[in-house]
Image 1 (cartoon, rainbow, N blue to C red):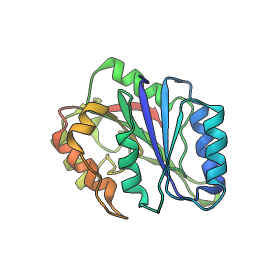
Image 2 (cartoon, helix red, strand yellow):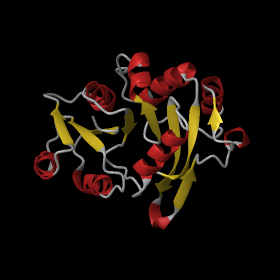
Image 3 (cartoon, rainbow, N blue to C red):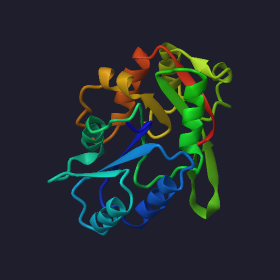
Image 4 (cartoon, rainbow, N blue to C red):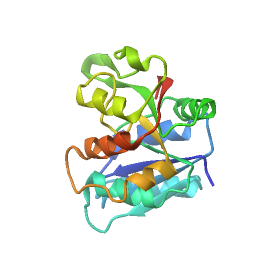
Amino acid sequence: MPKISIVTPVLNGGKKFRKCIDSVLRQTFKDFEWIIVDDNSSDITKELLDRLRSLDKRVKVLRNRAVCEASLSRGKGVEACSGEYITFLDADDAYTPHALERYIDAAKRRAADIYIIGSRLSLPLGFKHRYYSCERETNFCAGYMDGKQGCLLVLANKGLTPQLWDKMYSTAFFKSNIRTFPKLKIGEDFVVNIRLMANANLICAVPGTG
């Protein structure tokens, strides 16, 4: 059983998906499975996935017969997960080389339901914006909080994002609280995360950037 399951939905990922692929294959932590759900892509994505799967046995490719959107594709990926933890990576995003290692180091220090890592958004002209890496909320600087505090910080936009892509979850916790993903095109991350945080006993901050 792999330690971490990474779930990535992709629809016509194109050149940006190559950066995502490189970032996963360069992880310093190697004990993972990567479940990629191809949402009926019509570009080079299919060829990229066929090549990737042939080169790395940790990669599992699931294919939708028709476009289902990201939310339902993530749900399909979660059903196939076998890792102790689940994390999500969008096809147009990328990990820093030590992202998975930082998650696991945090899990070794203390068991939690949700782990949150810092992230950066790259903007035009080379500008970068640092996101939610504990500096904005002093209550989270200690490194831990309960789920109710997490919900309040998401709703107040103070220190925590509603997205899936900057978090790692206990697989048992995730699957016990999320039976199905909402059929939404926008805002599905918010719905899922609020439900998870409302039921979390402990949320852990992960030092560094994902």
